[in-house]
Length: 127
Image (cartoon, rainbow, N blue to C red; front, side, top):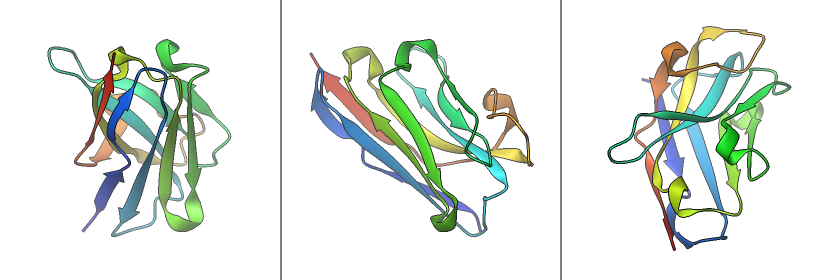
């Protein structure tokens, strides 16, 4: 059974940093793109950052460009999100996700292509 487990969330002050990790188990996703999405109360789900299966193509939402960095370690079936200069508007539950299509050349473009989701980890940025 496939499982995605996120860790690394928490409470941080404005300007602080957090590093999210996602560990996949149950099967290898080395041939699948992965990504991070987030959901804040009263808002829609947002794509935060995604990365293709090779790790050479990434996508970021505009508001996190230059602050967040997505990376993956295919050997350990893991996905990471380094978040720097955090702002209160980054407060949300962050979800790890896996593209349902194998060997997509580009980074997953939206939640529409996601086949697997983690349970989420809360990130709270205090002002």
